[in-house]
Image (tube, rainbow, N blue to C red; front, side):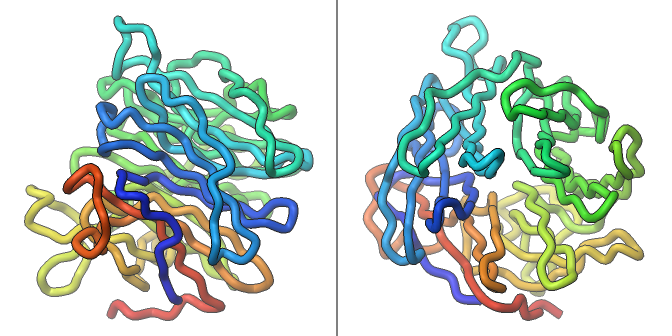
Length: 327
């Protein structure tokens, strides 16, 4: 796979996703001054015909902070889902609202629609059987958990099941394969993620603890194999760590790992050009080729920055295969 920067404007650009709609590629990400909420993130959507030249087509309002946008196509519309901190001073950094906006033409987007307020972050939306499912998580650290919601119209969502309760669980991505749903669930406090598996109608889950720390989880299928991506921590000996006491002792990288479905573990495959504040991938398959978006700071020293050490860029990794480079 080859990787190259598609957006660098000297600010902190992060938390990506990618989609194809109306014969164009779309990438969304958060644009701010730094990673935490004080960075006052705003949601950007950029568009390209050829993945080489990109134009900014939409900025969604920042509120106190907006973040973690995801793209999906539903009922012939391009959807963007993201969440934002409440503009009520009493709930700053504690209460979140999730929003969805749709575009019929890939140019004009509707005003963001606030999803029913469950005090949840709607983190990823996936299509399955002509409806959409949302992986959501609690916003309060003391109430962590990951939940599945379902919608027939892409606006009103109903609770389906609890994927992981408590256990420091939060961000999650979904992969549907025939009658099975795989949920890749991040856990905090240096814990490895959980792979949760459920059969339709996805009301009960079997959970497996994996072996490698992975943050900003993304799961996808390519050429018959299931892959997971996210932020990993590289040891001096080149191996990925399953536990860390201090994040500064290991190099953060964005990596691709293969899911071993027999043993329910993650096998490292490829480390992408990355470093510093990095991860949060999205992917699509188009004409047999994979396109994977992510963000990184590994080129910060050779590029312009308006926010000092916080600057990061949006990258695209592409290829017709995913070759194993980590032994």
